[in-house]
Length: 194
Ligand code: ADP
Image 1 (tube, rainbow, N blue to C red):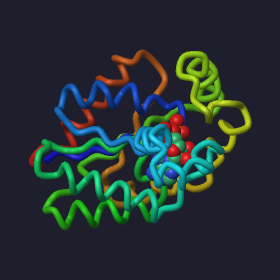
Image 2 (cartoon, rainbow, N blue to C red; image 1 turned 30 degrees about the vertical axis):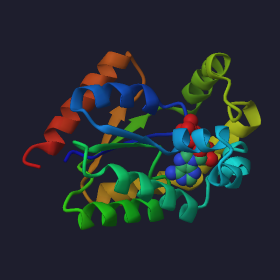
Image 3 (cartoon, rainbow, N blue to C red; image 1 turned 180 degrees about the horizontal axis):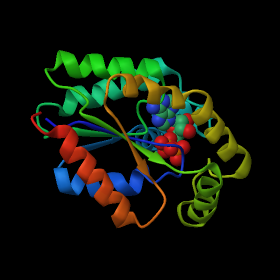
């Protein structure tokens, strides 16, 4: 198995790069943001529970997010080549649970690709995306909250993976294909012998 985390603040390009990584390495895409949006759209019990968090730019409580994620992992682990996690883990607790799950299944997170983008560039990108995607959480106030959640809670995931030697920082500003090239080189190096 090859398991990758794609990491970065809102608007860093996680979704764009995930699509390309999946194609190249034939991985199963798990975006917790997409999963939550789908539950909300279908008005499921989970969707009802998380709506006020996601729509206000706040992190969903760990126990809810982790339970949802584990179910998806259990349902798919036997059939896939590996996973790419997009938007997960967002807290150190989530990262620890993910490592434990991988270890229990005889595998690991092989690389954490962190896209580095300045806060000004993030805001400019999301401003553009708003017009296209019409997400409920892309307005100014909610966006600022999401960015704050990232810099208050999620950023601590970086030293966690750094201490385990799995963190790869990539400059997230530039041409999509140039960034993708840097990512694939990093993944190929990280997964040698895995
Ligand atoms: P972003 O563009 O902010 O990276 P996502 O599509 O990944 O957005 O997530 C949208 C929202 O879903 C987040 O603001 C948060 O409320 C919720 N969410 C997604 N993933 C997680 C997670 N791993 N832990 C807690 N909340 C999450």
